[in-house]
Length: 160
Image (cartoon, rainbow, N blue to C red; front, side, top):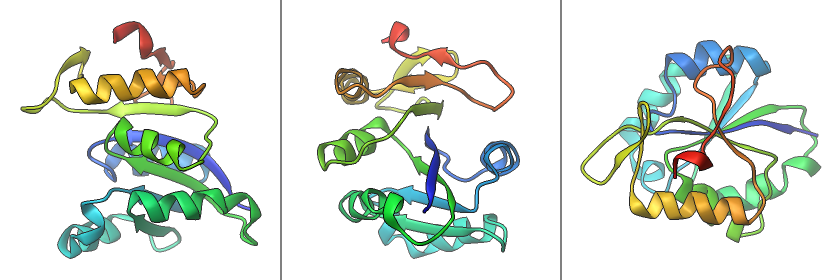
């Protein structure tokens, strides 16, 4: 049976920190990206596929399909070590509302944009994302800031 090693919010998705840090740290064999827009962007999918080593699997799902896939990971006949990547806590909250359970949510990268304001250091969140974090916390999922494996994790909620 496969195991979810990491659920990470990083709006850059696959990049150096993920590939050199987290993949090696967890000896991950599979990456699942959950994003309703990306699933329909063939160009970006091809770019992301090129960033993943040949010995790893990459799957990209919308939230609804991801929920079904992730709910069945514990019962699959594979032995994958899975990293799940999302761009926002909204995706995590929507999966949880569909019955998906996780052990921990790691926040790594949420850059400032026109909808987001500074949350902590280089992390930013919109009003809707801040509310999603609060709701995720109320549902019992621990949330930590953890940029790279060698850093000590920090408490995100104290910055909301």
